[in-house]
Image 1 (tube, rainbow, N blue to C red):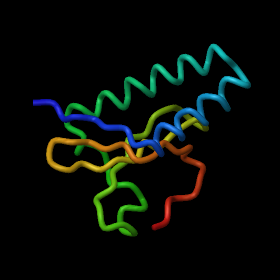
Image 2 (image 1 turned 135 degrees about the horizontal axis):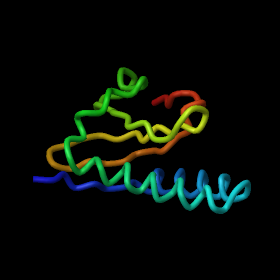
Image 3 (image 1 turned 180 degrees about the vertical axis):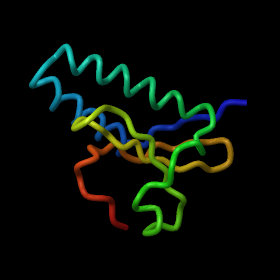
Length: 102
């Protein structure tokens, strides 16, 4: 039975900001990036616990996991929680950015 994936407003804002930043540099790459990210998020419907705990997991009460998306210098961390059969995507951050703090 697949998990239900919910995307928090904060994650939607993160995705939009990243997409616009990439689009200013290369519209074609931005479309490919967005479609790939969408596919990566959808993959969380199946076995989201396969993903490792995020570095910030110890700083929060909830278990925060991460799915890495991208290659080389263009890796993004999809940060999410799993509660029951629901995956809640909290943020999408470039891997070079500092970890989240409570």
